[in-house]
Length: 506
Image (cartoon, rainbow, N blue to C red; front, top):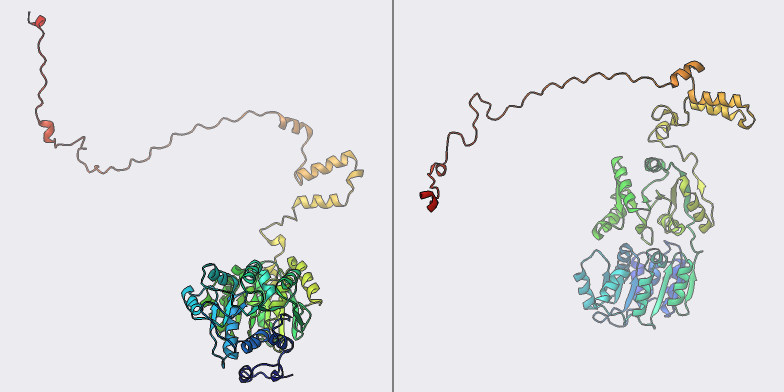
């Protein structure tokens, strides 16, 4: 089937043809006709299958009629992250080149006043993250009662990020007669309940089994030690020894680990950038653009880059940390092997990740192979990475010196059947070790209290040399005011005279 058989308008077909596309993907082929009919659509497809165009193209055909009003957008697209929202804006700019539509992007990290100005002029298409949209709605800066089409993209990611209560609030602000297009890569029970609440008699479009992986992606597990140093050593070895390596996305579970791994790779001479949620919007977009333009070869990122981002021609995906949720694994490795190309997904696994690997294999219904010899680091000798315990800090705790020999004898002899004399001898040997045995008479003499030796008298400490005073210059020391006497002290003082009693005169 070709695009011109789906029922799209001429303007949209010309834009698609100019973009170089002729044949729709399975999700586009099945979803676009129902979307053009005004039906609610529940689309389930793995990442990288063209879900963005599946709702962008029919929306452009529907928006050719009508006009936007101030503060009242006509369509609303909800995305979980800023990067996905910016990517959808680029798609509208590419496919809507023949349309004179006003687009507004409401995301965090951007000036509030600039976004408000776009909303005030009127927006045909509003692309937003839930938090910033509700911020506008609570301030009374936007009205959602004119929404004709509502798109909820990456619904499972919305669930993971805790946006479901916000989505429920937004759905109450839009008209109930709207058309809803609901897309997700996985369908956990919470998403199923959400779709039943928001969609009215939807058409279910499922082009692949939920939570399945791309067939062209080779998945491999790599053993590693649990310490951060060993994991970073394993990561560097994988990058240096990978076949057909062009670039790689390296995923970490925590934001702080993204910076640590990025600095470590920079220190060892790799071309690397970082992307995580704590960066401002300008830094995040700059990191993505650098990776897309091949300015950097490696991009260390958190799960903010795992969902829906269209980064073409990624040869490798490396999970530095095994994801806590099995669904995240599906989205991470979906960044490679896109558009029919081959990809490689490597996951560094420690002992603590065994349960997570079991859950991943259960979700994807597939056994992931282990890399042969994946536990041998190359950047440093094996003996330095894991030194034997007896060579750490001198004597090993487990060796125990003489106590270890006593423990070996105890292991080869049954205590419950030993004679009391033998147990006493063994106990003495355990306590005294190789010390010479003492006769009983000498032992009794040693137990008697001995007179304490007289302590030598303490000699008086020599006097420390007196520190020189400021006036130790050979002259007489000044006492009090010195030779100078203030004039008020030299002034004569008149004493009060008392009247003489009469008896004293006689």
